[in-house]
Image 1 (cartoon, rainbow, N blue to C red):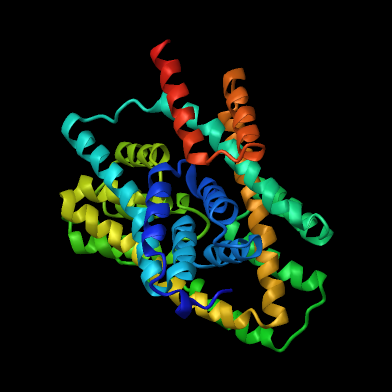
Image 2: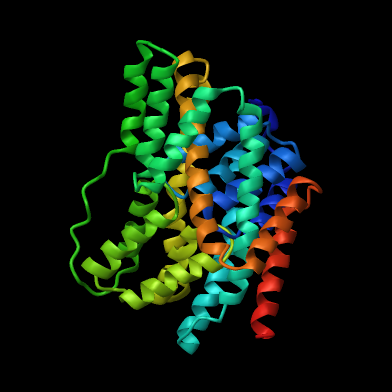
Length: 384
């Protein structure tokens, strides 16, 4: 990997512009964001090699917090050092936060969400196409690694069977080490390195109480520090803390918060922005967003250098390779689930097929396809 110090301060304007664009157009959740970042930074801009991208994807899936945001932070770190880390993360988060704030304002003012079902139905087939193209691109150079491909298949089936993504990532690392017969005294202290990410600090002993903006900050800070797998894990934290124990949100409001996260671009974790606005207006929205993403900036900065050093170890290279193949299996599982939900009629299937051809054969930038899909979905609703 390129030396971060040499890159510090270089290309920050390009970093900001690239991630602002993704922040406005990365519909479809973390897996779709991975695919769009790969298209942008591996295929189009060539800031990363396929191996570097998969390394970063593996790190992002190891570190707790919103994974797509962490991948953005890692790419920014490589391109522009510490300044790039901050710029990339902020540029990716702020567009989605602004959109969610606008929807939250409308929700509070008018008591309902805008009708976005048609747009979402047009975007989903494009997301499936983006995922398929990305999977094909990442698997192509690894077709001569049968053990890794078997691992992708096993993780894919296990994910569909309901096994936790975190468990599958760890299992992928261990299985790859066993397959390659790697034995090393380093394994003990490497495991210790991962222990902090599995430690669950003492739960906040909270009961139904008057709203407190600082307690809200703590609850989202805890969620950001412990969340594994994807932004959807955040919803479990929100339900447990804010609906069940604190009673600050209703079940209906939680459902609406989920809908906002699904139909807006950027990280799903900006659901924290929506919830914060509902509970305490703009100040609470900003604090909840800061709390949600702050752990990611801290963890990524620490783990990046640790993994960079550890990458020299044969054991660590093998473990990360296992995590990378497992991540591809998870991505395949997400693609399957999104595809089943999205490709429900001939028009959706046609959109997906055309989008795959345009991405794979003509290298069309995915954000333009997302926009076209949204327009097709909107036109379908308006024409009845």
